[in-house]
Image (cartoon, rainbow, N blue to C red):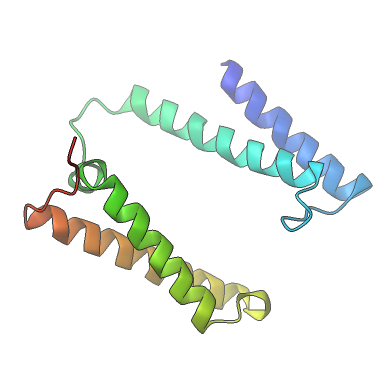
Length: 126
């Protein structure tokens, strides 16, 4: 229950700071941005906690794929991020363009990680 209260508190603080004190700025890494990031991360933790209570099934195949190849999927995500940043002017992209880029990015990352898992390749050496 505490995590839900913290998530709500950080979101409220982010909205207050963004509205009345200073706009959220990732580049400046101001207090409003820090509250926004805390709010988002605590919200994700709340959702994952809730999913853990609701679901009693075993892990999903894609979850196992990422767990077995964490380093490889992380490196692939960094390469894909670099490709997007080199090929698209992300600052002037519309919301629809940004959504499409994120969708293709996520699909590609999941597809490659899933295929590596399906082929039995394991990049975890410990």
